[in-house]
Image (cartoon, rainbow, N blue to C red; front, side):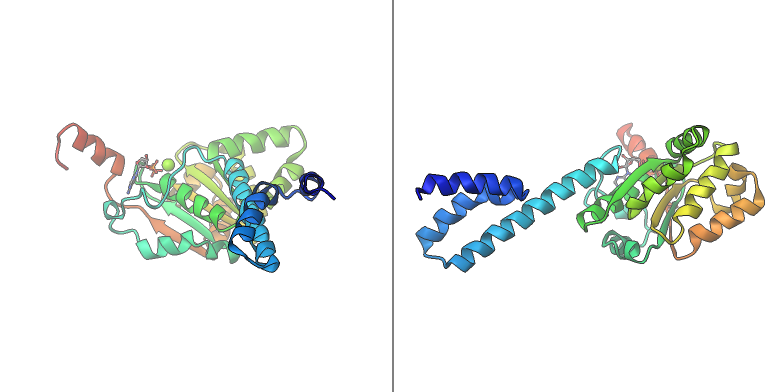
Length: 253
Ligand code: ADP
Ligand code: MG
């Protein structure tokens, strides 16, 4: 058979087998193998490596899109000296994703502007790089979606939809009273309990959560679940945002 026929077949076969990486790379790898006198086994290995790498890249891209981060933030951009009380090593350990393996939780607690959301996103992005599925959502949006799902009688299906994520980053449990949404948020957290990891950011210390959920029994049950197997990170330095704006305006902190 003429070489072109094999080329055409490879094109079709790679499409059918869904191997876009191989399809893109094989010609150059074949040329390289011929020029450098590599064995066929080595060539095959190079082809498979290329396909695996391409799959990893496209998974990374898909998972990052699905995570719906509001912005992209990394640990490289994070100034640890701004929050001296934050245990850097423990944080970088969390970035490794072992806590997700153990279905443990993380709570980032501290005043506004201290980098909680930044760290939540950075942990989420590292988790994706480690192969986990992540979803980032604000408490407000989640509660709205829960209320809507309930009013449309599709709450169980809505909750099941979250099972596919290894890590859910729940951003900004704040002062807004959740009234009936509080029970649903409790249900969400209870439903996730020991099924997958949850990372929550909040500017409220635990003692004040009852102001949001109103019901003391429910709040205790929620804290029980959330803080069981949990890493609590305290962001207690002066607000980074505040310090930056002061520096910009020439005021020394
Ligand atoms: P929080 O969620 O605690 O209110 P954010 O994470 O939204 O705070 O931080 C506010 C802004 O300041 C973001 O743009 C964030 O990237 C930046 N920021 C906060 N802390 C740091 C830090 N230690 N190093 C670098 N950037 C920071
Ligand atoms: Mg925040």
